[in-house]
Image 1 (cartoon, rainbow, N blue to C red):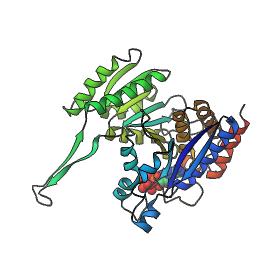
Image 2: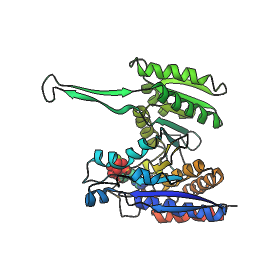
Image 3: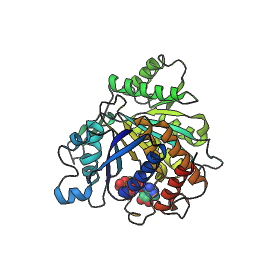
Image 4: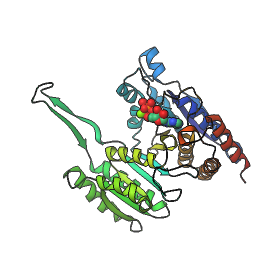
Length: 356
Ligand code: ATP
Ligand code: MG
């Protein structure tokens, strides 16, 4: 029997609640399948740890994680710790240290969940957004001159490298090729930004030659927001820069009904290091401890993790179970229901067990 070593980092707020739900579902899948099992190690790296010790994780944290097949991450962030401390103290060192350059965000409307778009339901919106996760607008380069003076200048430098753009483009084309519609939209802003963005367009055209069976087009990011709202059926796989995809995937999550159902995988496609799977939402302290956090995003990212581990049948079984439970109306309050996290989790486990 195969054993997958999973590092679980529940962290802050509703993170521990949704990760507990996700682990229960993974256990049920392993029992149902019989061909694999999980060896889960929990790490207490969090804002609480920061408040006690001055660091969210130990200095050799990333080194400790290298021994695992995947990282299952909850959410980080606390009201009394600055955002840049939590972000740079835990998630970013892992993403960057493990060169998880492909941030993959599937979005679709699940049955039973209402999109804010009138007349748009399951089947009308089924996208995967690929976000460049290692460079671009969030490179950290730039600065401020003449700080505080009337002539102050602030710069924020977006860095795009040929290596970085080519590898994310290739990942996106390959992903598009693996999906039934074989359709890719490359998003840039190359009319107004005439250096790095024009390079994106050129590299897209070059890489497209390796994938003659993929239909692709280019969109400017502003027009893309309109297209996502007006014609969601016309899109499938989408690739964009760190900043653009950050914004587009929040829009996508809202169009799919709630942040509580949006998953993400931070993937090292070359598999040199473990990849990290997490719900897109944050720690949501407003609902922490109430037992009503939506676990669906975490189930979905667990399915992404199973796929990455090489268990696509289990991933599909989990998603079928989630879709059944949503269709049955077992929903948390953020998507219009009155079920608790545990009730949704129990229903998903029942569906996993009951399925032939
Ligand atoms: P962070 O600062 O870590 O980003 P946050 O408090 O801003 O956390 P988010 O997770 O970004 O919260 O989400 C914003 C709001 O969306 C939350 O306050 C919460 O009400 C709702 N929300 C987010 N995730 C979930 C979920 N899994 N289930 C239910 N509601 C959620
Ligand atoms: Mg937030």
